[in-house]
Each structure stands twice: as C-alpha cells, then as structure tokens.
Amino acid sequence: MRKITRAFLTAVLPVVLLVCVLPQQANPQSRANFWFLNNTGKQLNNLYVSPHSQNSWGQDVLGRSALPGGMGTLIVFPPAWRGVCHEDFKLVFSDGSSETYTQGIDVCQLHALQFNADTVEGF
Image (cartoon, rainbow, N blue to C red; front, side, top):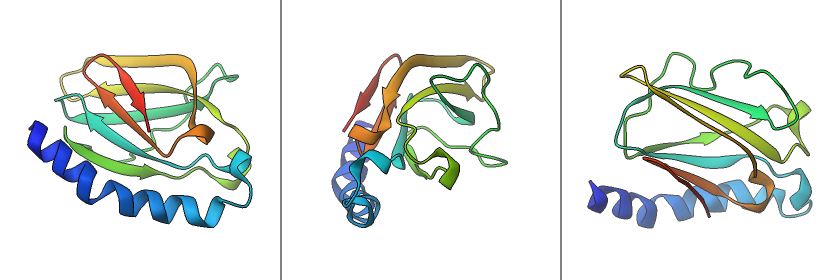
C-alpha cells in the first residue's frame, strides 16, 4: 500500500497542485481549496469540514461517495468560504469509527493534506 501511495503522490499530486495553485496565486490569502488524501488504511464514508470558528459540522463533503484508503479527492469550498483558512475535520469510517481534528488547520498555507492512521500532514 505504501508503494501505491508514493506512486500516487509522485504522479498525480503535482498535477493537481498545479491546477489548484496557478489560478489562485494572485491572492494566496483567498486560497482554501486543497487535495485531501485518505492514507488511514480505512474506507472513509463521511468527511466533514468546518471553519474552526464554527461549532457545527454542516454537510458531508463526500456526499454519497466513499473514499477508499490510499485515494484522494479535491476539496473545493464554496465562494462564501473564501478567506476562511483555519478548518476542522471529522472523518467517519466504514467501520463506524471516527477521528476529529479540531486544531484549526490552516488550509490557505498548504496545497494538500494527508490524513494518516493517527496524524495529519500538510504539504
């Protein structure tokens, strides 16, 4: 699985980053879209993203989709969220377990987030 993740990051992530970053370079403070990589080893059934200042999770950004371990997706925020940089995350897995990350990750300062079994890394 590690080879798949490394191959994926090496081949696909640079292209995605290029697409995400180039149109937004003029105003980096407004950039909030990012690449989300599920490297937890579990299938992700629900993903909730919320501004750190908010007390509720809102809607599941995956909708009816699921995200298998080792796969990624582009998270695109609605225009109303432009300039909101510090985000919290709740991941709900197919086995019913969940992980929350409520430290207010600054998504405006990165291009990708990799969620591992018990940590999160930004790139």
